[in-house]
Image (cartoon, rainbow over all chains, first blue to last red; front, side, top):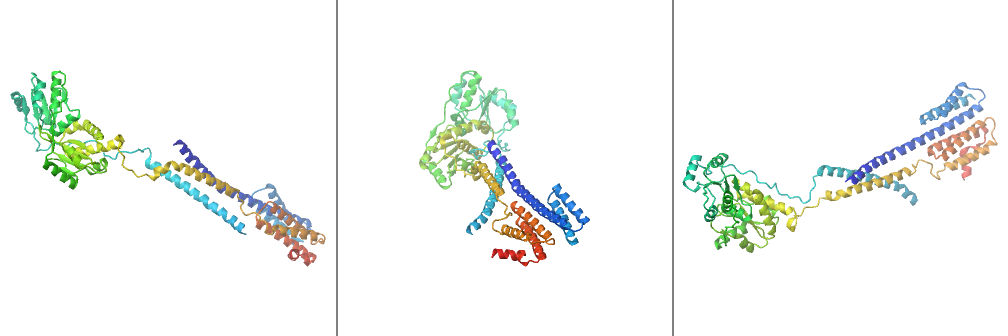
Length: 101
Length: 457
């Protein structure tokens, strides 16, 4: 009886473990991918804004400030939400420099 | 094309199999737990279906039963005569053998009717001058009580109310001389033609013959079915008169009904005839050995005694003695499957685990698939940017640079296998910037849409 009891216990634990793994691992993978994607977009926006700043004829303090904030957020390496905030700031700064020209 | 369809459908099939296995595992677990609850430790093999094989305490004496006179009257009667037989008494004995046993020892015997109540028994005990008191067929005297302890003794006792054996034993014990050997005084005779005809007719008609005066009213159904699944014949006769030979129905009926179990009752004595008589000795000896005392003290009917006897026969059959086949018991599928359930469960768990690992290792399908055009578009736009870099001026340069930055980001995203829509949107932004740059320079041929079309054609 003891060996079958062991089967039931170990089997039950394995089932629960497999269920958790198959739920958590893809979720975590998707989260990582989302974060990577968001940071990829944010970096592109920051680089783009930097180009616009270098091309600008006169300084725009508000845009400087926004870009600085975006770079600060990027340096802190947060999650997807932080990346989106940084991207938004960078895009705004980019727009400001472009309209200034 | 066909390959693509197959590879697309297979993951779904594995996924369905995986969930089906989980369901089976859960069902198996539930069945196992349910079986634990139902059966627990209460498991037995070939348990006898007989009712509890004891005789309930007998019926109380009825008002019409014979009673005994007062102690003084009985003492006077015993003083008058060596043997006093009160009205209603049933016990008989072989007077010559008792005389021989007594010899010159003065023996006064008081014979009382059976089934007295407590008060009447107390009065009997108080008759001091009686050496031996026979109450019903219960023989006692002094500190002793004599009971038969073998088959001839029980047979004489229950079939003809013969108490010779106990009397002789008791007198010898009281005289402190060796007890003489037992002597079976019962005689048999062949049944007469008319007797046999009546019994045979009844047995053929309903399987039961209850002679006039027998207290058997019917065969106890359940006990009879479990004791003799193939059926049996029952003959019930009243207690036989003492001194007369008993009709020997058993052998005659066995000849008439070969292979059929036959139960013949003489009073409360039960005889078995028919196939496999070995067990009948064990059944009879164990039954009367256990219950003779009880039966002789109360007024039991043949119905009650037969029912308990049949239960005893069932118990003996189920104990596996005498190689009698056990009655067929249908196989309980749950009992049979129970040992396999843990392994079934383990198999389900293992396969579920394997399929789970497989589903984890499978790519999500959100990455870039080959041949969807993103890398080609990236290459085309990069070539366009390189060509344009020779032609741009201060006004168009920032847009071109931004386009290049976006192209670099798109390339990095492609390398990291980021989602397709993200790569697409980066490429679109890059194309927009290049378009802006081309328009600023005024070269319509370098606008991305036009340029890429030209390269592709």
